[in-house]
Amino acid sequence: MSNIKERLDKLRTLVQDSDFLEGKGLSNEVNIRIFCYDAAEEMTVRHFIEQITTDQTLNCHLIECNLYETFLSICSDIDILDTIPEMEDSDGSDFLLGQLHSAVGEDEFIAKIQELGTCKTGDVLLLTGVGDVFPFMRVHKMLEALQPHYSDIPILVMYPGTFDGSSLRLFDKLTPNPYYRAFNEA
Image 1 (tube, rainbow, N blue to C red):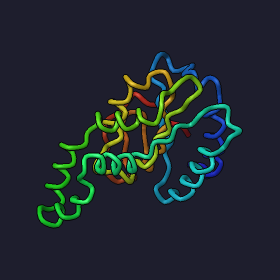
Image 2: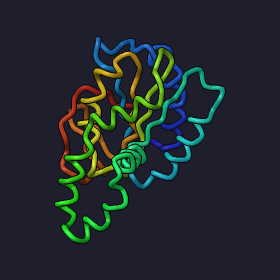
Image 3: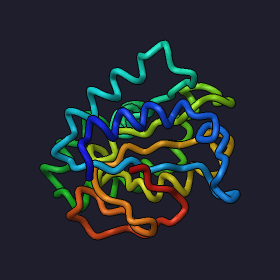
Image 4: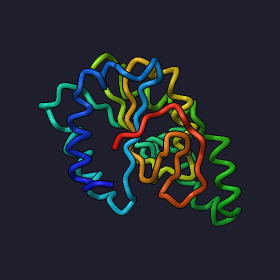
């Protein structure tokens, strides 16, 4: 991979490109892009996200959705946030994870994302917090669920891992998950 700062500068240019915003050149595929980076570069990526989401000079509107913050918000909404540590202590991590998966699924995430506002042409849904929300949500499942709801705008995923065009591998260490409907952004 080339220098992360150079790659992020190219990404800033890409999100403003009319072909990107309109999904041109994708052969009628969904406009989902994955920006992969080494997890060691997380702080640089977070700084970039903070800058780009507040940049008033962009000719697009970035709608950031931090998946981990969304997860915490959902847990708070259903009044289980405070009980999570107790449940893990008393019943173990595996039990807790099973309970959380049954209580918080893709539908709850989509409903919470939709609360961010109606998306229109010129908007980009920016998904962050992918590494933080693991193992409570897997991004490949989230993307499959989002496709029908956000087919008219690009979705850009900031991904601490690798995507080879057919599989996502979080942190470059975990077992890859098959996903083929996205495009890798260098």
